[in-house]
Length: 191
Image (cartoon, rainbow, N blue to C red; front, side, top):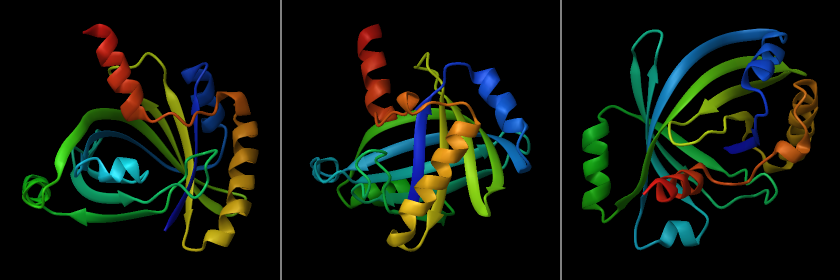
């Protein structure tokens, strides 16, 4: 699956949220993500790959689900969009123990607070996430869709860029920085 994604720093969280609410939203929810990243001798990081165990907790229902995700090297260097393979796992703790037994070490761990909006934009299923972190002052927006075919990604990027303009977010707000690195830097400054 090819995840086609744009990530931008927000100038005004509430203004952007109001712009999103002006769209025809299919569903909306608040989720907290508990993200843990794993690597083995820095092999994945060196290859621009990611291996993650995520718990998504729905703040409205209290339901928690766990996902194991592998992201391959970026197919689009500008946006850092990557092929993504994700599966639901039943037991978070045992899944993590399997990773440890296979020689993986936890390299990062953080909480991500999201408000998720699902909609159809120009006949494409799109997820918009407004994102905050405890460690960072900035807030972010992630606009994404998926396809099984790499040749479809260029057209999907065009649609996402149009949506970005409609939300009054300029291209200079886009970021290719990794949350992990931003959080590590913020923690180092506080130490």
